[in-house]
Length: 383
Image 1 (tube, rainbow, N blue to C red):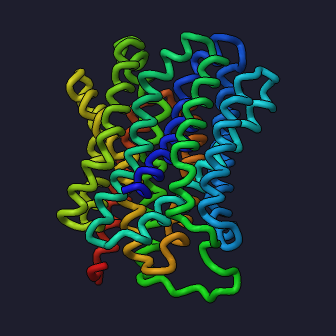
Image 2: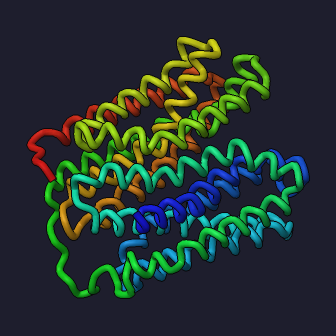
Protein backbone atom coordinates (compact mmCIF):
# COMPACT_ATOMS: atom_id res chain seq x y z
CA UNK A 1 0.00 0.00 0.00
CA UNK A 2 2.97 2.35 0.39
CA UNK A 3 3.30 2.90 -3.37
CA UNK A 4 -0.36 3.77 -4.04
CA UNK A 5 -0.37 6.00 -0.94
CA UNK A 6 2.70 7.85 -2.22
CA UNK A 7 1.01 8.32 -5.61
CA UNK A 8 -2.12 9.55 -3.82
CA UNK A 9 -0.01 12.21 -2.10
CA UNK A 10 1.82 13.20 -5.27
CA UNK A 11 -1.41 13.65 -7.26
CA UNK A 12 -2.95 15.56 -4.36
CA UNK A 13 -0.10 18.08 -4.60
CA UNK A 14 0.59 18.41 -8.33
CA UNK A 15 -3.02 18.21 -9.58
CA UNK A 16 -5.33 18.68 -6.61
CA UNK A 17 -3.51 21.64 -5.03
CA UNK A 18 -1.58 23.05 -7.99
CA UNK A 19 -4.42 23.06 -10.50
CA UNK A 20 -7.68 23.28 -8.61
CA UNK A 21 -6.28 25.27 -5.69
CA UNK A 22 -5.47 28.05 -8.14
CA UNK A 23 -9.04 28.04 -9.43
CA UNK A 24 -10.32 28.67 -5.93
CA UNK A 25 -7.86 31.55 -5.45
CA UNK A 26 -8.82 33.43 -8.62
CA UNK A 27 -11.51 35.61 -6.98
CA UNK A 28 -9.04 36.70 -4.28
CA UNK A 29 -6.30 37.34 -6.83
CA UNK A 30 -8.62 39.67 -8.72
CA UNK A 31 -10.06 41.30 -5.61
CA UNK A 32 -6.62 42.07 -4.15
CA UNK A 33 -5.41 43.49 -7.46
CA UNK A 34 -2.81 40.84 -8.27
CA UNK A 35 -4.38 40.32 -11.69
CA UNK A 36 -7.51 40.97 -13.75
CA UNK A 37 -10.08 38.41 -14.90
CA UNK A 38 -8.36 38.42 -18.29
CA UNK A 39 -4.98 37.99 -16.62
CA UNK A 40 -6.34 35.08 -14.61
CA UNK A 41 -7.29 33.45 -17.89
CA UNK A 42 -3.75 33.91 -19.20
CA UNK A 43 -2.39 32.30 -16.02
CA UNK A 44 -4.70 29.34 -16.51
CA UNK A 45 -3.53 29.06 -20.12
CA UNK A 46 0.08 29.03 -18.92
CA UNK A 47 -0.75 26.13 -16.62
CA UNK A 48 -2.55 24.24 -19.41
CA UNK A 49 0.43 24.81 -21.72
CA UNK A 50 2.80 23.39 -19.13
CA UNK A 51 0.51 20.40 -18.66
CA UNK A 52 0.47 19.70 -22.39
CA UNK A 53 4.27 19.96 -22.67
CA UNK A 54 4.71 17.62 -19.72
CA UNK A 55 2.37 15.05 -21.24
CA UNK A 56 4.30 15.11 -24.50
CA UNK A 57 7.76 14.83 -22.94
CA UNK A 58 7.32 12.74 -19.77
CA UNK A 59 7.82 9.31 -21.35
CA UNK A 60 10.86 10.31 -23.49
CA UNK A 61 12.53 11.92 -20.46
CA UNK A 62 11.80 8.84 -18.37
CA UNK A 63 13.97 6.78 -20.73
CA UNK A 64 16.95 8.61 -19.27
CA UNK A 65 15.91 9.77 -15.82
CA UNK A 66 14.66 7.52 -12.97
CA UNK A 67 10.98 7.93 -12.22
CA UNK A 68 11.75 8.36 -8.51
CA UNK A 69 13.94 11.39 -9.29
CA UNK A 70 11.31 12.90 -11.60
CA UNK A 71 8.48 12.58 -9.09
CA UNK A 72 10.60 13.96 -6.26
CA UNK A 73 11.74 16.91 -8.39
CA UNK A 74 8.15 17.55 -9.46
CA UNK A 75 7.02 17.76 -5.83
CA UNK A 76 9.88 20.13 -4.95
CA UNK A 77 9.23 22.38 -7.96
CA UNK A 78 5.51 22.51 -7.20
CA UNK A 79 6.15 23.54 -3.58
CA UNK A 80 8.63 26.19 -4.74
CA UNK A 81 6.13 27.45 -7.31
CA UNK A 82 3.54 28.00 -4.58
CA UNK A 83 6.10 29.91 -2.50
CA UNK A 84 7.24 32.02 -5.46
CA UNK A 85 3.61 32.86 -6.30
CA UNK A 86 3.30 34.52 -2.89
CA UNK A 87 5.30 37.45 -4.28
CA UNK A 88 3.40 39.85 -6.54
CA UNK A 89 6.02 40.63 -9.17
CA UNK A 90 3.62 40.91 -12.07
CA UNK A 91 1.77 38.75 -14.56
CA UNK A 92 4.84 37.28 -16.28
CA UNK A 93 6.30 36.21 -12.93
CA UNK A 94 3.06 34.46 -11.98
CA UNK A 95 2.74 32.92 -15.45
CA UNK A 96 6.14 31.24 -15.08
CA UNK A 97 5.12 29.78 -11.73
CA UNK A 98 1.80 28.58 -13.17
CA UNK A 99 3.51 27.01 -16.19
CA UNK A 100 5.96 24.96 -14.12
CA UNK A 101 3.32 23.25 -11.92
CA UNK A 102 1.40 22.46 -15.09
CA UNK A 103 4.48 20.70 -16.43
CA UNK A 104 5.25 18.85 -13.20
CA UNK A 105 1.62 17.88 -12.74
CA UNK A 106 1.49 16.23 -16.13
CA UNK A 107 4.80 14.43 -15.63
CA UNK A 108 3.56 12.92 -12.37
CA UNK A 109 0.16 12.13 -13.89
CA UNK A 110 1.77 10.20 -16.75
CA UNK A 111 4.52 8.37 -14.87
CA UNK A 112 3.50 7.82 -11.26
CA UNK A 113 0.28 5.77 -11.64
CA UNK A 114 1.78 3.49 -14.30
CA UNK A 115 4.91 2.95 -12.24
CA UNK A 116 2.75 1.73 -9.37
CA UNK A 117 0.36 -0.31 -11.53
CA UNK A 118 3.24 -2.17 -13.19
CA UNK A 119 3.87 -3.94 -9.88
CA UNK A 120 0.18 -4.60 -9.08
CA UNK A 121 -1.53 -7.87 -10.13
CA UNK A 122 -4.32 -7.24 -12.69
CA UNK A 123 -6.99 -8.39 -10.24
CA UNK A 124 -6.07 -5.60 -7.80
CA UNK A 125 -5.51 -2.78 -10.28
CA UNK A 126 -9.01 -1.31 -10.13
CA UNK A 127 -8.80 -0.77 -6.38
CA UNK A 128 -5.25 0.62 -6.51
CA UNK A 129 -5.98 3.05 -9.34
CA UNK A 130 -9.06 4.24 -7.45
CA UNK A 131 -6.97 4.92 -4.35
CA UNK A 132 -4.30 6.80 -6.27
CA UNK A 133 -6.69 9.06 -8.15
CA UNK A 134 -8.58 9.88 -4.97
CA UNK A 135 -5.65 12.25 -4.36
CA UNK A 136 -6.94 14.39 -7.21
CA UNK A 137 -10.50 14.16 -5.92
CA UNK A 138 -9.49 15.19 -2.42
CA UNK A 139 -7.58 18.13 -3.88
CA UNK A 140 -10.69 19.28 -5.74
CA UNK A 141 -12.73 18.93 -2.54
CA UNK A 142 -10.23 20.95 -0.52
CA UNK A 143 -10.05 23.59 -3.25
CA UNK A 144 -13.76 24.19 -2.90
CA UNK A 145 -13.77 24.33 0.90
CA UNK A 146 -10.48 25.15 2.63
CA UNK A 147 -8.70 27.21 -0.05
CA UNK A 148 -11.34 29.99 -0.10
CA UNK A 149 -10.97 30.13 3.69
CA UNK A 150 -7.19 30.45 3.32
CA UNK A 151 -7.75 33.25 0.83
CA UNK A 152 -9.42 35.14 3.66
CA UNK A 153 -5.96 35.40 5.22
CA UNK A 154 -4.67 37.05 2.06
CA UNK A 155 -3.40 35.67 -1.23
CA UNK A 156 0.24 35.60 -0.15
CA UNK A 157 -0.57 33.65 3.02
CA UNK A 158 -2.70 31.18 1.06
CA UNK A 159 0.12 30.50 -1.40
CA UNK A 160 2.58 29.96 1.46
CA UNK A 161 0.27 27.54 3.29
CA UNK A 162 -0.14 25.54 0.08
CA UNK A 163 3.65 25.55 -0.31
CA UNK A 164 4.12 24.26 3.24
CA UNK A 165 1.51 21.53 2.80
CA UNK A 166 3.09 20.43 -0.48
CA UNK A 167 6.57 20.38 1.05
CA UNK A 168 5.30 18.27 3.94
CA UNK A 169 3.81 15.69 1.56
CA UNK A 170 7.05 15.67 -0.44
CA UNK A 171 9.05 14.91 2.70
CA UNK A 172 6.59 12.25 3.86
CA UNK A 173 6.73 10.35 0.54
CA UNK A 174 10.39 10.98 -0.37
CA UNK A 175 11.77 7.61 0.74
CA UNK A 176 8.81 5.66 -0.59
CA UNK A 177 9.47 6.81 -4.15
CA UNK A 178 12.98 5.46 -3.95
CA UNK A 179 11.63 2.06 -2.91
CA UNK A 180 8.79 1.96 -5.44
CA UNK A 181 10.28 3.44 -8.57
CA UNK A 182 13.85 2.33 -8.06
CA UNK A 183 16.98 4.18 -8.99
CA UNK A 184 17.23 3.25 -12.67
CA UNK A 185 15.52 4.73 -15.74
CA UNK A 186 12.19 3.30 -16.88
CA UNK A 187 13.73 1.88 -20.02
CA UNK A 188 16.96 2.02 -21.91
CA UNK A 189 16.98 4.59 -24.68
CA UNK A 190 18.15 1.88 -27.05
CA UNK A 191 15.59 -0.72 -25.99
CA UNK A 192 13.22 -1.73 -28.80
CA UNK A 193 9.62 -0.69 -28.27
CA UNK A 194 7.15 -3.51 -27.78
CA UNK A 195 4.01 -3.39 -29.94
CA UNK A 196 0.75 -2.29 -28.42
CA UNK A 197 -1.49 -5.23 -27.52
CA UNK A 198 -4.58 -3.62 -29.11
CA UNK A 199 -3.52 -0.48 -31.01
CA UNK A 200 -6.92 0.23 -32.59
CA UNK A 201 -8.65 0.08 -29.21
CA UNK A 202 -5.97 2.36 -27.74
CA UNK A 203 -6.64 4.87 -30.54
CA UNK A 204 -10.40 4.74 -29.92
CA UNK A 205 -9.88 5.24 -26.19
CA UNK A 206 -7.55 8.16 -26.94
CA UNK A 207 -10.30 9.96 -28.87
CA UNK A 208 -12.92 9.08 -26.25
CA UNK A 209 -10.78 10.49 -23.44
CA UNK A 210 -10.15 13.63 -25.47
CA UNK A 211 -13.91 14.05 -25.87
CA UNK A 212 -14.26 13.65 -22.10
CA UNK A 213 -11.77 16.49 -21.65
CA UNK A 214 -13.95 18.80 -23.72
CA UNK A 215 -17.30 17.51 -22.50
CA UNK A 216 -17.07 18.65 -18.89
CA UNK A 217 -15.38 22.02 -19.52
CA UNK A 218 -18.72 23.85 -19.00
CA UNK A 219 -18.99 22.38 -15.50
CA UNK A 220 -15.43 23.16 -14.45
CA UNK A 221 -15.35 26.68 -15.90
CA UNK A 222 -18.91 28.03 -15.94
CA UNK A 223 -20.89 25.97 -13.45
CA UNK A 224 -20.90 28.43 -10.54
CA UNK A 225 -21.65 31.37 -12.84
CA UNK A 226 -24.45 29.45 -14.55
CA UNK A 227 -26.11 28.62 -11.24
CA UNK A 228 -25.55 32.04 -9.71
CA UNK A 229 -26.35 34.42 -12.55
CA UNK A 230 -28.06 32.55 -15.38
CA UNK A 231 -30.43 30.69 -13.05
CA UNK A 232 -30.59 33.66 -10.67
CA UNK A 233 -29.86 31.61 -7.55
CA UNK A 234 -26.98 33.75 -6.29
CA UNK A 235 -23.32 33.04 -5.61
CA UNK A 236 -24.09 31.45 -2.25
CA UNK A 237 -25.95 28.63 -3.99
CA UNK A 238 -23.33 28.57 -6.74
CA UNK A 239 -20.57 28.13 -4.18
CA UNK A 240 -22.51 25.34 -2.51
CA UNK A 241 -22.78 23.55 -5.84
CA UNK A 242 -18.99 23.75 -6.25
CA UNK A 243 -18.52 22.26 -2.79
CA UNK A 244 -20.81 19.40 -3.83
CA UNK A 245 -18.70 19.02 -6.97
CA UNK A 246 -15.65 18.67 -4.73
CA UNK A 247 -17.34 16.13 -2.46
CA UNK A 248 -18.21 14.07 -5.51
CA UNK A 249 -14.62 14.29 -6.72
CA UNK A 250 -13.33 13.02 -3.37
CA UNK A 251 -15.45 9.85 -3.48
CA UNK A 252 -15.54 9.27 -7.23
CA UNK A 253 -12.33 7.31 -7.92
CA UNK A 254 -12.89 4.72 -5.21
CA UNK A 255 -16.58 4.38 -6.13
CA UNK A 256 -15.90 3.74 -9.82
CA UNK A 257 -13.03 1.41 -8.88
CA UNK A 258 -15.46 -0.88 -7.07
CA UNK A 259 -17.60 -1.09 -10.20
CA UNK A 260 -14.54 -1.66 -12.41
CA UNK A 261 -13.40 -4.49 -10.14
CA UNK A 262 -16.81 -6.09 -10.65
CA UNK A 263 -17.44 -5.63 -14.39
CA UNK A 264 -14.00 -4.74 -15.79
CA UNK A 265 -12.35 -1.50 -16.87
CA UNK A 266 -13.82 -1.43 -20.40
CA UNK A 267 -17.51 -1.81 -19.51
CA UNK A 268 -17.03 0.58 -16.57
CA UNK A 269 -15.61 3.25 -18.89
CA UNK A 270 -18.67 2.97 -21.15
CA UNK A 271 -21.10 3.03 -18.22
CA UNK A 272 -19.59 6.08 -16.58
CA UNK A 273 -19.22 8.02 -19.83
CA UNK A 274 -22.98 7.60 -20.28
CA UNK A 275 -23.68 8.61 -16.69
CA UNK A 276 -21.42 11.66 -16.96
CA UNK A 277 -23.10 12.73 -20.20
CA UNK A 278 -26.51 12.48 -18.55
CA UNK A 279 -25.28 14.47 -15.55
CA UNK A 280 -23.91 17.24 -17.78
CA UNK A 281 -27.20 17.40 -19.69
CA UNK A 282 -29.43 17.29 -16.61
CA UNK A 283 -29.37 21.05 -15.76
CA UNK A 284 -30.58 21.88 -19.27
CA UNK A 285 -33.95 20.29 -18.47
CA UNK A 286 -34.14 20.40 -14.67
CA UNK A 287 -32.96 23.43 -12.69
CA UNK A 288 -34.30 22.68 -9.24
CA UNK A 289 -31.80 22.42 -6.40
CA UNK A 290 -32.00 18.60 -6.15
CA UNK A 291 -31.23 18.22 -9.88
CA UNK A 292 -28.37 20.72 -9.67
CA UNK A 293 -26.94 18.87 -6.68
CA UNK A 294 -27.09 15.53 -8.53
CA UNK A 295 -25.34 17.09 -11.51
CA UNK A 296 -22.64 18.64 -9.31
CA UNK A 297 -21.91 15.44 -7.40
CA UNK A 298 -21.92 13.12 -10.44
CA UNK A 299 -19.78 15.32 -12.69
CA UNK A 300 -17.46 15.96 -9.75
CA UNK A 301 -17.17 12.23 -9.03
CA UNK A 302 -16.52 11.34 -12.66
CA UNK A 303 -13.96 14.05 -13.31
CA UNK A 304 -11.16 12.09 -11.56
CA UNK A 305 -13.23 8.89 -11.79
CA UNK A 306 -13.06 8.58 -15.58
CA UNK A 307 -9.40 9.60 -15.50
CA UNK A 308 -8.66 6.70 -13.14
CA UNK A 309 -10.65 4.25 -15.27
CA UNK A 310 -8.92 5.41 -18.44
CA UNK A 311 -5.53 4.95 -16.80
CA UNK A 312 -6.37 1.38 -15.85
CA UNK A 313 -8.04 0.55 -19.16
CA UNK A 314 -5.20 2.02 -21.25
CA UNK A 315 -2.73 -0.17 -19.34
CA UNK A 316 -4.90 -3.21 -20.07
CA UNK A 317 -5.19 -2.38 -23.78
CA UNK A 318 -1.55 -1.45 -24.27
CA UNK A 319 -0.05 -4.49 -22.59
CA UNK A 320 3.23 -4.91 -20.69
CA UNK A 321 5.96 -2.47 -21.59
CA UNK A 322 3.65 0.06 -23.28
CA UNK A 323 1.48 1.24 -20.39
CA UNK A 324 3.36 4.51 -19.89
CA UNK A 325 3.41 5.27 -23.60
CA UNK A 326 -0.34 4.67 -23.86
CA UNK A 327 -1.19 6.73 -20.79
CA UNK A 328 1.15 9.51 -21.92
CA UNK A 329 -0.73 9.57 -25.22
CA UNK A 330 -4.06 9.75 -23.40
CA UNK A 331 -2.88 12.56 -21.13
CA UNK A 332 -1.46 14.65 -23.98
CA UNK A 333 -4.68 14.31 -25.96
CA UNK A 334 -6.70 15.25 -22.89
CA UNK A 335 -4.55 18.31 -22.21
CA UNK A 336 -4.57 19.58 -25.77
CA UNK A 337 -8.29 19.06 -26.24
CA UNK A 338 -9.24 20.67 -22.96
CA UNK A 339 -7.12 23.73 -23.71
CA UNK A 340 -8.74 24.13 -27.14
CA UNK A 341 -12.23 23.41 -25.79
CA UNK A 342 -11.92 26.08 -23.10
CA UNK A 343 -11.19 28.69 -25.77
CA UNK A 344 -13.96 27.47 -28.07
CA UNK A 345 -16.58 27.41 -25.32
CA UNK A 346 -15.54 30.92 -24.25
CA UNK A 347 -15.98 32.12 -27.84
CA UNK A 348 -19.33 30.39 -28.14
CA UNK A 349 -20.62 31.90 -24.91
CA UNK A 350 -19.36 35.34 -25.90
CA UNK A 351 -21.22 35.20 -29.21
CA UNK A 352 -24.45 33.52 -28.12
CA UNK A 353 -24.74 33.99 -24.35
CA UNK A 354 -26.41 30.58 -24.38
CA UNK A 355 -25.36 28.56 -21.33
CA UNK A 356 -27.67 25.57 -21.99
CA UNK A 357 -26.18 25.19 -25.47
CA UNK A 358 -22.74 24.63 -23.92
CA UNK A 359 -24.06 21.87 -21.70
CA UNK A 360 -25.88 20.27 -24.62
CA UNK A 361 -22.65 20.26 -26.65
CA UNK A 362 -20.67 18.93 -23.69
CA UNK A 363 -23.15 16.09 -23.21
CA UNK A 364 -23.07 15.30 -26.91
CA UNK A 365 -19.29 14.98 -26.82
CA UNK A 366 -19.52 12.63 -23.85
CA UNK A 367 -22.16 10.47 -25.53
CA UNK A 368 -19.85 10.24 -28.55
CA UNK A 369 -17.03 9.24 -26.21
CA UNK A 370 -19.22 6.49 -24.78
CA UNK A 371 -19.84 5.14 -28.29
CA UNK A 372 -16.10 5.04 -29.01
CA UNK A 373 -15.41 3.37 -25.67
CA UNK A 374 -18.07 0.79 -26.50
CA UNK A 375 -16.24 0.06 -29.76
CA UNK A 376 -13.09 -0.82 -27.81
CA UNK A 377 -14.92 -3.79 -26.30
CA UNK A 378 -15.04 -5.54 -29.67
CA UNK A 379 -12.54 -8.38 -29.61
CA UNK A 380 -11.41 -7.67 -26.05
CA UNK A 381 -9.80 -10.36 -23.98
CA UNK A 382 -8.94 -10.62 -20.29
CA UNK A 383 -5.84 -8.69 -19.20
